[in-house]
Image (cartoon, rainbow, N blue to C red; front, side):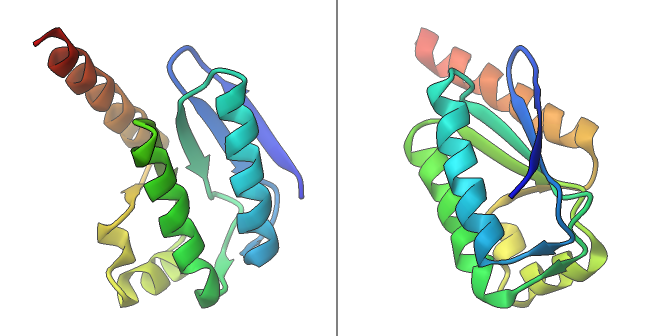
Length: 124
């Protein structure tokens, strides 16, 4: 599975180069997230701009990616989710369980606000 990786100061963008979210992608994405975190980036944006379809059986794996991030006090945001993929996520209200931002700038805002919150709580 191929990914485009773009590392910034406070986050890393991982863009899968595929048109469908399936078990192969979610497994490779989980591995890529682990590798990226081991290299020092704790906040990840998954840019799904190329993914136009989703296999419904992979939705629990997306939730697990999200939950694994939060359990490690890290952040994961999905962005550029197509209408077709979003419709599947809304069927079981998964869109309410994971961070989904329509655009990249909104995904960056979510991460920035979370970093500010963490800093404020750590000062107290």
